[in-house]
Length: 122
Image 1 (cartoon, rainbow, N blue to C red):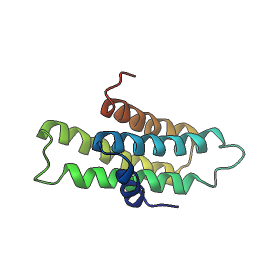
Image 2: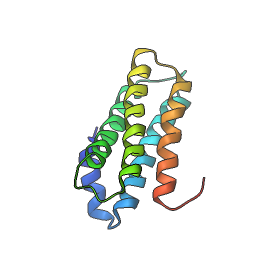
Image 3: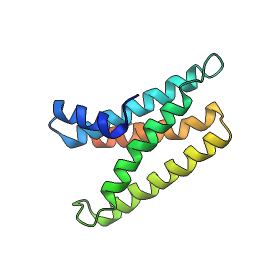
Image 4: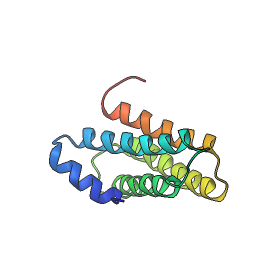
């Protein structure tokens, strides 16, 4: 499994627009989580990897938006940081008590943020 940072670097070489890169990575994480959710009864062996990938991705985002030299307005950075903290805490909850419906929040957050980055309305 590729780490989120490695995947970020690989996709960055192919895409010039950082917003599009971030959106694609969020959609990839959402797709992995959705796959686990859909196959929950048959096979949930990918749950740990999907959660880890998503957590690493959000760690990159959190590190970026909490940097003092980040260009984004403070209010937006704070909102993203709050979402990131929710993602981290919710991930821990899922690891403690795995339930397929608990994945929906992570999937939706990733898709909504990706849509915003791509300038789409959901």
